[in-house]
Length: 200
Image 1: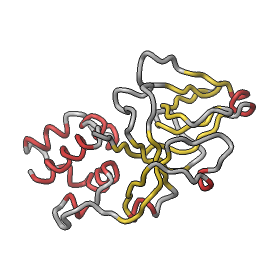
Image 2: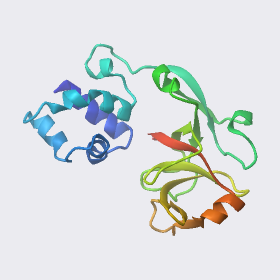
Image 3: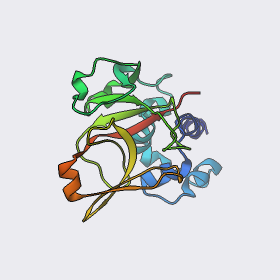
């Protein structure tokens, strides 16, 4: 089916998996296979969530428009340094476009990935689209400022005692900060990663 081919295409382009989509939708990971084989058409009721997950419009998925929504340009930074608010950063390395619908939900910026701590999913040169917010929950991938260091991209795991910042590259040990350290260093969440735009 054309709509499922589109979904598969965008999953591949965004380095997302069918399993991740199913987890996002809260359904069994076999559901996508059932959709593609024609055993089920339940995907129709999930179209709003699928469009959010892939950052495309429902009309686009349904062939009512031929291109993804475009509209709002956001800055891409090479670094985010301690002590400088996002709104005050002047040095940009690129720009990316997000949909007007997405832009209406908050303030966004892009950050270029450096280093290999988040491989294999995030590699040097990739750009992550970040929604500015000062909180992140367990399982979120966030941009975090630790003390006077530049911002870093890490997976969040919260505990009653503090927060763990996890690299997806197993060669890097997780970093744990107590609630006291979070306040004193400080450890600040700058935003939640909502999309990866891989560079080929």
